[in-house]
Length: 169
Image 1: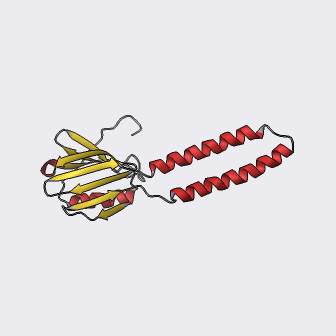
Image 2: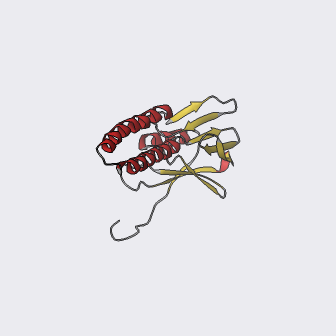
Image 3: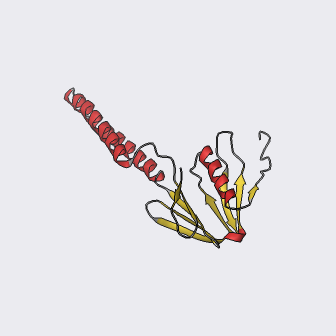
């Protein structure tokens, strides 16, 4: 998802993955799974199948860990600020973890071809000797929107070509 943020020095955009559910709602879904599984486990224990208890616990722990990992990946954020002299890229989860300031006149956008028809093109911002991967979590439509946005800021775009890697490609 691409969102324009107010900025006094220039244009600022926030890039985040699409999220279909919030963290509190995800916790409620997991607690619902815990309740249903606990109900089934109680009936199984009353029937004499007590060995179900550790496996149900492992299953709930694995589902909880998977939901947490997915939710954490969906909390990624990249902020691109286009100032008069610099392009600033900030990346992180809950807070800014990485930051780059690139001189605007030397920034270029590089595109790598799609690995298959439904995948978005991969993007990099390149300046002098730095190459920063950009928004690898965006879907194809948002990726095209970001490319239009970068071109509207005057950044030149270069498409990389890949040589065939084998007989089947």
